[in-house]
Amino acid sequence: MNTDPVWILGITMTKFGKHAGKDVVDLASEAARAALKDAGVSMRDIGVLAAGNLMGSGGIGQQIQKQIGQTGIPVYNVSNACATGATALRTAIMAVKAGEVDYGLAVGVEKLSGAGLLGGGGKAKTQGASWEPSGRFGAVAPTDGRIGTDAMPGTFAQIGMEYGHKYGGATFELFARISEKNHSHSTLNPLAAYSKAMSLEQIMGDVMIAYPNTRPMCSANCDGAAAAVVVSDAKLKTLSLEQQRRAIKVSASVLTSDPWQESCQVLPDVNTLTKNAAKIAYEAAGIGPDDLDLVELHDCFATAELVHYDNLGLCEEGGAVDFFNSGATWRTGKTPVNVSGGLESKGHPIAATGIANIWEVCHHLRGEAGQRQIEGAKVGLAHVIGLGSACGIHVLEKSGL
Amino acid sequence: MRGHYIGGMANQVPLVDYLVLGDAPHLQAHECVNCGARYFDRRNACASCFEDVFKTVSVATEGELTTFTIVTFAAPGVPVPFVSGVVDCDGTSVRTNVINVEASPEHVSLGMKVRLATYSIGTDENGTEAIGFGYEPISAN
Ligand SMILES: [Zn+2]
Image (cartoon, rainbow over all chains, first blue to last red; front, side, top):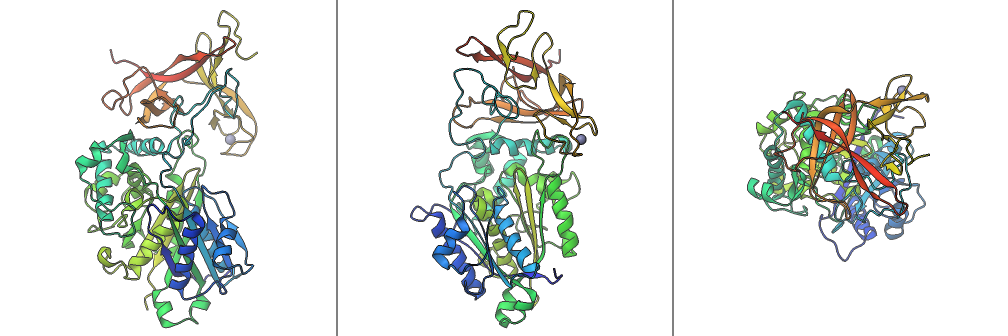
C-alpha cells in the first residue's frame, strides 16, 4: 500500500425523483457513463467496479457492465444499508490504494418512489392461529408496535429525543427548524426531488409520522443514481492539466461499525461509530472541523441531523442545539450543512446517497455549483449512516492547481 | 412446559421469552459473567468481551424514560398511535412501549418514572392467552 492520495477524477448524480420509464440498471448506467465522461476516461481504463443497490435482487455490478461495457474486471457488489454508496466508493479507493489498479468505478442506485415506510416492512405483519415462539426473542406474536417501533421514523425520533434528554433544548420546533433550513437550501438544487421552501408552520402542521418527525422532516423516498471514478496519484500526474485541476483529493476515506455500548442493541447507537469515524477522518486528513467549508451529513430525519452536529465535532459536546440556533449550519453560516437540501428534500435513494453527497461536496470544491455555490470552498466532508450500523466519512479537498 | 404455570396461571404464554409471568412479572436478561453486559435475546458469545458464559438475571421493574416517540404511522397491521421508548432500569436499557397513558406529547415526558405492567394480547385457538408488557407512568400523587 502506498501513502499517496487517491483522487476523484469524475463524479455525477442523476436527478433524484420519479423515473417511471427507467429501471435501476438504466439509472446506474446513466450515472456511470456520465461519471466516466466527467473523468475523461472509458470503461477500458477502469480496473475495478464496486456497485450497490440495497433493495434490488443482487448482482447490480454485472448488470451495469452488460449495459456500459463488459471488460472482465473484478466486480464487488456491496451492501451496507444507507452507507452502501460510501462503501462502494471506499472499495474502489482501497483497490487503488492497494496498488492493484489505476482507476476504479463506484456506482450506487436505488428505485424507491412510492416505497412507503422503511424498516418496519411494507407488508402486513401476520400472526398464526396459535402462539408459537420464534426468533431470537422467542416471540409468539409480532413485536413491532408492541415492544417499541421497528420503523425508521420512530427509531430516529428516539435518537434525537435521547439527545434532548441528555442535553436539553431539543423541542419539536427546534427539529422542525432544522427541516426548514434543508427545505430552504433545496430551492437552489435543480437535481433535488423536492425543491420547495416550507415554512415552520407548514412543517409542524404536516402529517405526523413519529413525533417529533412530521412528513417533511423524513427523508424522501425517490429514484436516483450516483457514480464516481477514482484514480491513483501517479496516474493523475500523467493526465491533462484540466483533469488535474478538477480532480478532488480524497483526504480521508473511513468506514466504521458500531462498537458495543450498553444500550446499542436496544436503540441503535448512531453516535459512537460516527464519533470514531470523524476522529479517524480528521487525523488522516490533518484537518479539524473548523477547516470545513461545507458538510453533507446524513439527515435521514430532522432528528438525526441534530445529533450529528455533535458527533462530527462541528460543535462542543452537548452543544448541538445552541450551534444550530446560532445559524451556523445555514448556507450563509460558519459551517454550512446540507446545502443540497439534504435527504429530507434532495431525496434518499438509499444506495445512491453515499456517492451523491460526495458529488455535492465535489461540485462546490470544483466551483461548479452555480447558484448554490459556497464561495471559495476548499475542504468538505460527506457523512452517511447505515443502521445496523455502518458509518462512512469522506473528507475531500480541492486540488490547488 | 412453556405456557403452563403452576398455581392457577395455566394457559398463559409471554409475548417474548425474556418476560417472566407469575405473581411478580419482570424481565430477565442474559448477563455476561465476565463483563456484565446484558442481552435480552439468546447469544452465541458476548458482543462486548467475546466470552460465552452467561447467567440469568432479573431486571429492575421500575425505571426512567430516557427517550420516546409517538408513532402515528406504522406498517400495516400495527395499531397506532403508540408510544415507543427506552427505559433505564437501574443501568439496563429496556426497549418498550409506554402504556396506560394517552399517546400525546402532553402526557409523556423525557425522564418520567415508569414501571413494568402486563396486559393480555389475546387468546389463541388452543385457549392459551399471550401476555405482553409495557411500562406505565408511576403517578405523582
Ligand atoms: Zn462480556
